[in-house]
Image (cartoon, rainbow, N blue to C red; front, side, top):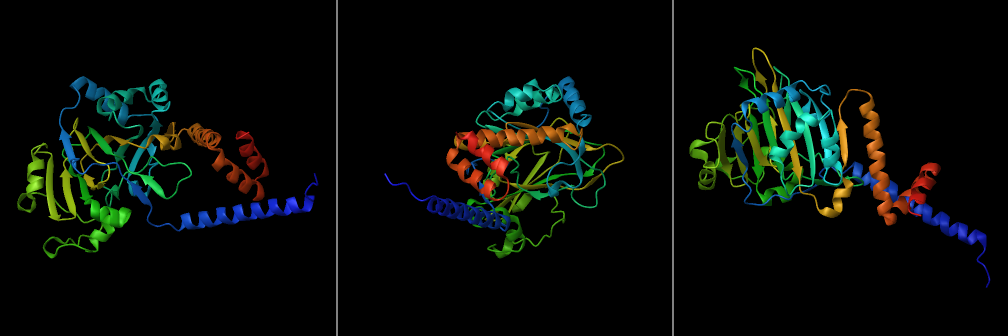
Amino acid sequence: VKSQPLWKRDNVLLGAWAIITVLSIGIQVILSDWEDPILYRTNEASQPLVVAESGLFDAESARELSACAAGHPLLSNTTLAEAFTGTQGLIVYFNDRGGLQDLRASQALSCLVPYFDKVRDPKANAWVMNVLVCDNGTAGAPVKWHVDQSAALWFNSILRVVAHTVSVWYAEIPQPMVGGHLELEHFSGEWFERFGYKSLKRHRQGEGLVESGAMAAEEGEDMGEIGGAASSAIVERERRQYDPDAVALGKVDPHVRQAVVRPRENMLVNFRGDAFHRVLAYSAPAGKRVSLVLEQYRIPRKLVCLTRRFVVKSNKPPETALEWLASEVDMAIRFLGKNPSIAVPIGLALGLGGGGALGFAVLKITG
């Protein structure tokens, strides 16, 4: 059998590497310019916008949990997105593939486990839990408009999974407090599918709205409490599920439902994960607005391996940054080991781009 000349094989390999590199660079450029990511939702049309429940815990349990949240040693300046500039807190990512066991075994977080057990969605398989401390007297909203999508998927910059349910428990509410309300806006499926993460912006610009219900509110403007004559018949029927003293509902046009929640200590609020929401600025003589937030995700089983198993993110102490990096690397290695078809081109591209050692390691993982 006549062997193929070495130079021909080299040309083939070099051509393959060049193609892979060009494709990799092109994909990264496209992803970096992708302004409107695809939001993957699991919410049902019948899911209520918001449900409030007062007195979630007995007095002693509420005091213990509140003390844990407000005085947690890992609290620091916000580690969340830009929408949370007026806050402090910590954030924990975990899933049901070992993350739950890690959460329960963590001494630093054991005092928060009773909250998770109390409000857990049995159908969820990934969670993001954070302690949120909103600063007193901020110039604007301490938490700006956003949709919760913190459970990022590895190797996927376009598809973002939206929380199915967000559960908020109010640990401390200063008295008297002026402001500090939670505002929510939920858009119809038709509107959301059309505009995605830009739904709120498009709505503010008045696109597609009926004239009688169009809103021209700018970012930062207080909508006030919603309800009364503006509520539709659908909203009126839903109102019976809510605590009327804590939640006001409204509907200004066919594409959006709105709600305003007045927080109270030891009150639980569950709202749709695909609802835009923000926290208004507040003022109080003393104290801070402290809440526990649990984003609950129902991710397709095949994609759960792309979520973080267990990561505690805080700006202090320094070693948590190392734990974060170690967890990210560990998750990447486990994912690549189970997906050789993805690992091979990634390894080749890294090797050609100068990361020879790392590329070789990725290739070795796949055998």
